[in-house]
Length: 365
Image (cartoon, rainbow, N blue to C red):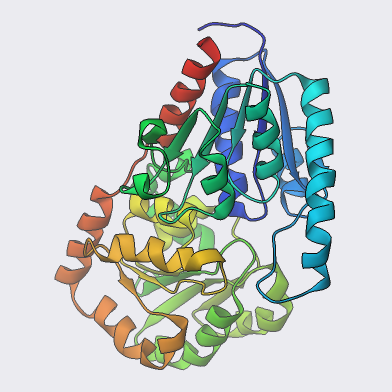
């Protein structure tokens, strides 16, 4: 492989859905170009400032955030933050001299990719969702390539720039089927019972946590044991349920491969990265999309799967019907096999390699 020393700049963050794909892309690039220099750019005070250094990469922070839906002081500060971030992004690019700039979404990627494209530096964005955010929609007119995970995104992006790649996923998820026994031992589960895995996203989800708390007796009656990832923000509120038989509460799950392997059913938010992982894992899943995201994109993500008869979905506004929906998920082995099979057909396990192939083409060009 070509060992030319490259400077690779990657920008993305705000949530795990933007950060983990960025790190996966960087890891694959580092494997191919072992002498490359890497620099990440994120938003100050967001989780990428912790997660990226933990993965072994340097990061610089911009003073940037999104526009809030309601009128707030932060909205009045937005023009000042944007100007500040554009100036700092210019300075970072001038000093680092990247050969290619990659954006995975989030507020910080906007100024960085905008400046890079204007300097004619090769640029690529990776759009995880079925409905793009405003940052990537604006950037799409300027960047060289757009890697997507869903069909029909030519409605939002120039068709000649789109490559369907899928979303990067953790490589240890590709063989979860062989880890069932290891997973049951790891979590100390009762092998005679079915296991429900509950995922509220990297930050946790208040509504899902409240729902699970209300349904613990119902799950017990269904003879379902619960592995509940509640999020760091909510751990102190729900840790007490660890004393209950058949329930274990985790602020964060460090071994997602074993969490997926242990599960028979999954309740999850519908972030793009989560959906990409779930399609590879292919366990019967009930999505509860977050309504508190831009353009309601989680509902659109979930619908893209549900429309293929590959999962079930219930909106937060309809949670009074949760028990009926969950019973439909667990009642029939045949139904579970059908939706799992359909979900597996949607999996794109080679996304990271394909995206990095596109980066290589840009660099060579």
